[in-house]
Image 1 (tube, protein in one colour):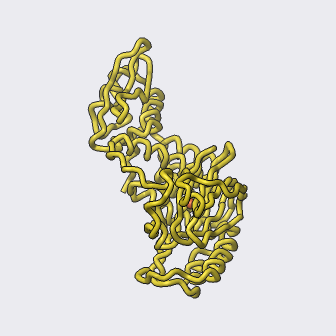
Image 2: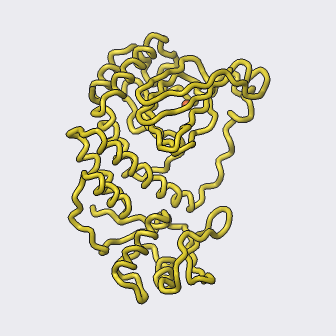
Image 3: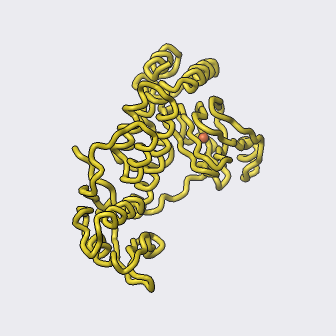
Amino acid sequence: MRLDDVVASFARLDFPTPGEAELPARDTVQAARSIVERAVADDDFLLDCMALELALIASNSPRNGLVPFLTLADSGIRMAFGFWPPHGGPGVHEHTAWTITGVCRNELEVRTYDRAASYSTGALVDKNLFTASAGKVGYIYEPGIHAPRNPTRDWSMSIHVISPRDGLPLADHEDAPPELRPAAAPPVHAYARVMAARRKQRWLRQLAQIAASTGSPLAPARLAACFDLGSTATRAYVEDLGGVVAHDSSSRYLLRRVAHGLVLRQQSTPDGSALAVETPGGLVREIETGDIARAALRYAAERELIDVAALPGALDEEERFALGMALEESGLFERVRAT
Ligand SMILES: [Fe+2]
């Protein structure tokens, strides 16, 4: 089953159009759940979705929560991947309209809460706790509160099919327990782009690993996309998976600072030199080296664009390469992609 088949099957179901306020019948959502269940079992469906996800990653659009890789034109239904690090999850949240969740890789543990009791008491009231392994697809039809979490030491990936009305406030929203009320958005700091750059590389390695494990004829193109978007370390990871042969592994490449407003400082330390970055919580040292890299770190702190081969100081090629890789892995700089 391919993504096009899923889109066509959804189009045959009786979902309201995006402008209609009515909700679909329960049977319709159940039928959609069955389609997603068959699709999640097919690697080619996941690899089709992954192509759109990689395009989303390439666009570098800011990510906060689940970001759809696809929105269906005739129903407004959104599809998004969730990537959950070991023991990670999105925290407790409410769905105000129907949603379908499928586990694509590894497993999720889902705690659910009694919505009526939580709203009437003003505190979250536990209802259920269950584990869903890869291939399991569930849905909620009425508004519901839950907290999915990856209970394992490996990464988990989920797919979410989301009603266009999910997230719209319901009539009783003022009675919500405090945990469900939207937090005031913190001011966006340039350092958020650093964290996003690191997260992006972790996701790319997960996607590459999943693509490689399928053995599908679609996998090489996904691996090539992961390689293209990857840092030097991610590229090496993708090469080790056997999907891509690098044509140019020289250290002659450019790195660009991930955000314009990002403030970097080269600092002296008892053991040599460090590169620190201004964060909302103050200066944080991201790279600490011996004295030999002092000039190179000062150079990095002062520039938006770095030629790794031109890092100054008494460094040999291998040391320049290692320092370039450290600058990428810190999330402070990203490789400039060939256009
Ligand atoms: Fe959820």
